[in-house]
Length: 545
Image (cartoon, rainbow, N blue to C red; front, side, top):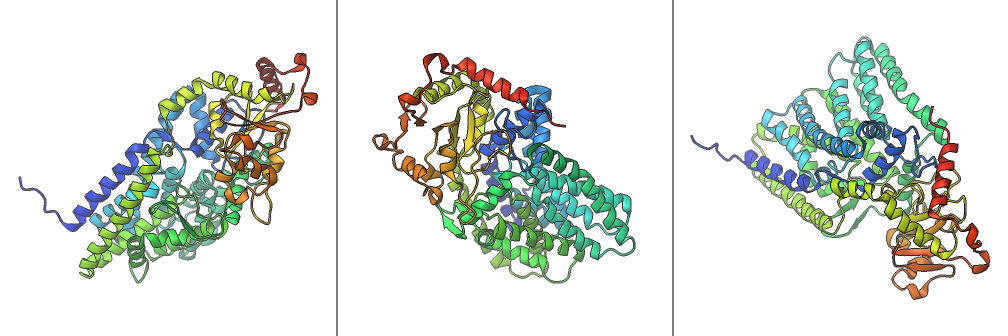
């Protein structure tokens, strides 16, 4: 049997499939820091304590209530072993499903079968997509839901039928509950409605009402429990953009933390083909207009409001739309018989850029980033008690522990919360988990710079330890006196600022109280009293409605 002829498209498809495997396989079954934060919140939600980061402390720290609710249900059913296994499988399935939906959308835009399949592979092989989608977060599921909504909302005649429009509104509501930027899809719905004939008003009303009915209960519960309408982690994204206004900065070879348009310019071959698919006449003009409207809204959000630094996982859905347009553009170029040589050059350039970024991401994994695997997470969760005992011994060694006050450690990488039990709180240096209620320290932001007020946090009497160098993690925000002093002395403990000392066991700074301020031995809190404090604080916290 003769082997199929290795056409350029087939060779490119094989290369993309290999690139996808190289990026996905090392991260399959692993969980990012954000995923661990959501798992910790879901763990308390599973016991009826919604919107808690530290036990007994209400905080507005999740921007994906639907994903958190799913994880809470899995934890209630089978604990962490079941939840980690199912979430890992779901993230991989969501990536594959999104690639298939990209193919379907490309066919809607007029791409041929081979070109549409190539578009799906192109999406799944992008390093920013393939390396982020499997890490336990909602990005792949949100991309699937977004693509399904766009496919359905641009189907001719669908919005003119109230029942169909209501179903689409429910899907839109699900998108919003998966990611708040799902609200941007309403722009695509408005564009599609403009192309609808009879029944436009009824369809618009049904879609809007259904979306509100899905989203409103979650928003009300969030407001009722936390006292806030919008999640605090979303505010942190906006503030991060304010304190990092530069659009481009490179840290390593093609390791991209760019503003959204600049990130797109790096993938010039993809942008060129997407432009080809977006311009000129072609089938399904309403679909094309709806996609372009959603793309414009997404790029505006990530560039002008939240910033695009460290949001590769959030832009997965945008790369899906671009890949569908690129497949249509590729099909158009091939149908005209034009650009064969330039197409080969573009494919080679794309593989070179993506390959270089893949190498950079592999290096980051070898250096310890890229999340934690399931076995490591399960061992860390099983060892919470012993780890918390050691942390308490370090935190209380300076004589600052008080009866009735749960000691806290401050860090940027607050996912370590999942490795400790409730006898120690974790406070966020960058304000992502600044609690809304519960008496714990609240960071707050300087509105002029977007920087968290770290001294307000570090001076709080409950914060007895600092686990990360503020200058290394938030160099542009370490100008406050205490944060700067801790940062300057991080590698030189002999320069310890007054009231702090270096603790080798904790590998961080521990607050030191003057002997006159220390409680008598009989009043010094023990590990058992810390447990009683957490139990009383949790019991006083009303359960969610």
